[in-house]
Image 1: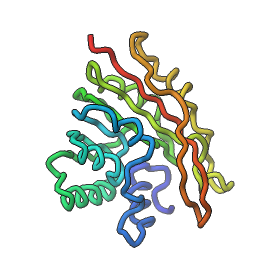
Image 2: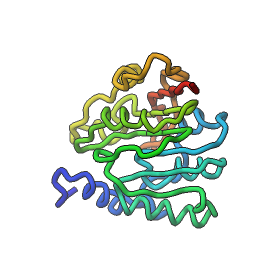
Image 3: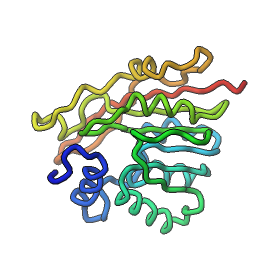
Length: 214
């Protein structure tokens, strides 16, 4: 990347344009496997997605009856997501919001708050953002955090300076949750992917916690 320095907005705007494939998008457009696994059995309600990108998770949630607010820093990514929502007749179920999560503070509560792969090659106050996300969970609602178990392919090639991602236990500790919150999932979710023609197994960290009703 050039010309953006360490400005997150400029970096992601450029990335979502320069990394587009023939489909016109950077990512597959499919829901993250761990998110689908964790949410499929939950009753639909209101959902907030942090770092929604091109909308794969948000659109899946909307197609399964959720009313979604999806936040991302990139206008380019949100434009792709909004176009797909319109094509699929889901525009009425998703509100797309452009915001820098480093400056974001919740103003409402949701039945589900999700953050999948909220990692960045430039500085991102991830722990602080996730602690703020706790305040966006409604009574009886859930917070779902999915992360890389290790730097993903292409990021561990010696050309990028990436710290080892935190474990689910470390994320749980950093949230400093009240004692009455229930931990429903804390562990590893394995999925398969193809990278440069090679099929491989990837381990993601998954943490799902629930706020008490009372």
